Length: 111
Image 1 (cartoon, rainbow, N blue to C red):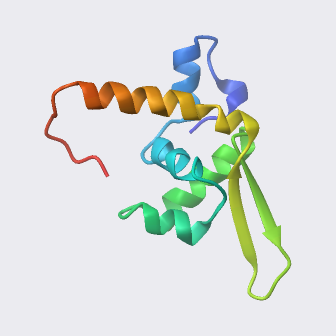
Image 2 (cartoon, helix red, strand yellow; image 1 turned 180 degrees about the vertical axis):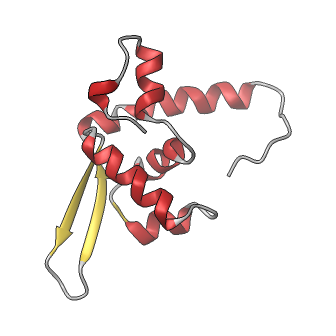
């Protein structure tokens, strides 16, 4: 994934840069329900590796879509939450969901 400052001027291409790679959209989908810990996100997305989840969350944080809050507790607790900009993806994902449910089913391996 590239950073937002490398994103093209075309809105669709920019969206694809920001939500590039496997699992990106599904991670956002889960965070639309509210703040979650790393393990909660991983548990809600069977098949995602810790490495991939870590990379996507770091990229989202760099691009201003997610905030990471670390609490000084024993054991340490880290919570991820969509920023206001990240939360604006709700309407995009809702539109994608509506469209996908309106077309005939296709054979695939969507997680």
